[in-house]
Length: 297
Image (tube, rainbow, N blue to C red; front, top):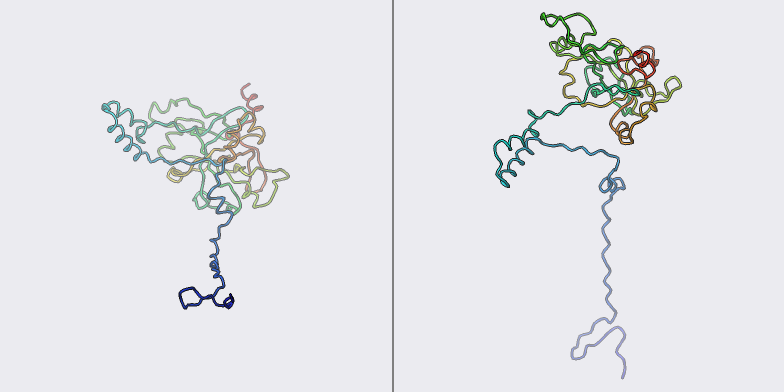
């Protein structure tokens, strides 16, 4: 039988013809994918194991939820409920605050206040370098402390029995009362190392740590008077004072050393802002173990 023409295919029983070439459906061009940078991917799925998580607890909401849960699950007496809420009430909870100063043989730990760049206490100070990772800090003096005192005296003054106050700078009781009445405290400014060096490196041939601060020599000798209202809401940080960084960390656990570099600071020298020269730390900030032994003798 003769074959039909190659371009036409006659369907049997119909007079219609159609193209015998196969129909090929081409897929549409895919849309360009949304650009996702590597940084976004890392931020979304990468968890830094060295980062310390910060957990914020709403005490009032937590107290209310706990009380509702306890009332719904069990019958709790009035006395038991009051005991359960004592630890959660911010007015009744008695959580001891860390001491402002803790003295040990190799280091002296100070609780200090972090000063923002716009704080009034920094008026007249060098502006903090843009690439300086450390802020200005304020170390508080205990009433009765002097620049050369290691531990503040805690003996009650006889003048207070008669309703008066003595004029001794080393009197803990009278100076504490005087500062409380004036709503002031005394403090020493701690200058971040990069700002103290105005971005240069190093300091008289010595190298410093990233989280190192210098004790301002002027306010180490003559502390500045600070209104309590100026530092009331400032965050508190930890500074370890010592003769050297290796001495400070000697005997400390790995976790404590890591915490110091994450959240804390070290200080091994004073700094004279007028002459731009280093100065030894005053005994109030830290007294070396060798000098402490001689003082005890």
